[in-house]
Each structure stands twice: as structure tokens, then as C-alpha cells.
Image 1 (cartoon, one colour):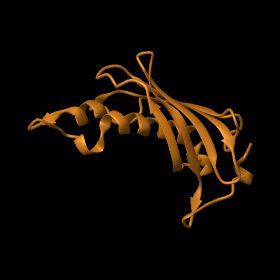
Image 2 (tube, rainbow, N blue to C red):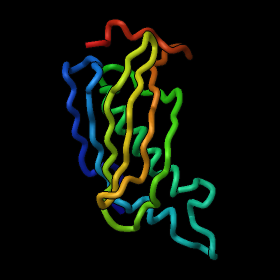
Image 3 (cartoon, helix red, strand yellow):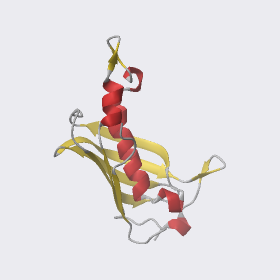
Image 4 (spheres, one colour):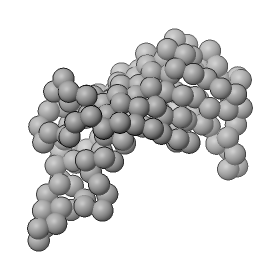
Length: 145
């Protein structure tokens, strides 16, 4: 079973900083999704995880953390998310999670996200990310490029 992203592409304007317009793309296969949908005794393995929803949501969140360059900035804690599910996932075909930073606030970054499979939109929405230290969202002034 293939685990993790097949490919991650990040296009920041300033490496190590966050700017409006920073983008990322995360490409994944459907191996984990297909496993969660497998039946054991007539019940899908991932029934209580809601794979049709959580799989595209997770991919969208991952794309958002890549767009905010989490490994360099620390901005990667999900504060809020809103989304529309447009189509169900198909068992075959890569899923592409795209993200673009659209707003930077004092303590948060808003990222537009979309997940597409076989040229069909699976999910679109917004993700709000923060940098947390000692349980509190931190100001982002020095991270804005």
C-alpha cells in the first residue's frame, strides 16, 4: 500500500515567509482510501472515520500546511475549516490537493483549498491556520514576506 504523498510542489514568493499568493499542491493515490473502504464482515474498515469526507479534508489541510511552509514557519495548526463536497472520490485516479494563501491576519492565515480527481472537483473550501506556542496562537508579523 502506498502511504503518503506521491509529490509535493510548493511555490512560495519568499522562502521561509508567508505571502498572499503562496501556493502548494499535494498529489496522492487512493490506496489508503481504498483500504478504509474495504469491508470486513460487511462493515467498511474506516466506517467511523467517514473516509469519503475525511480523506479529501485531510488532503486539503495538508496542502494548506504546505502553502504556509509549515516546516519553516510553524504555521500549521488548523483553527477552522469550511468546505463543500462536490463529488465522491473514485477508487482509481490521483487526488490533487491545491492550496493558495488568500489572507494573512495578525495571528492567522486563510488558505483557499481544492481537491480534484480525474478533472472533477471533490472538495473546495477555506482553511484557517495558526502558529501555536504554549497553547496560544502567535502573532505572525515576522513571518510575513
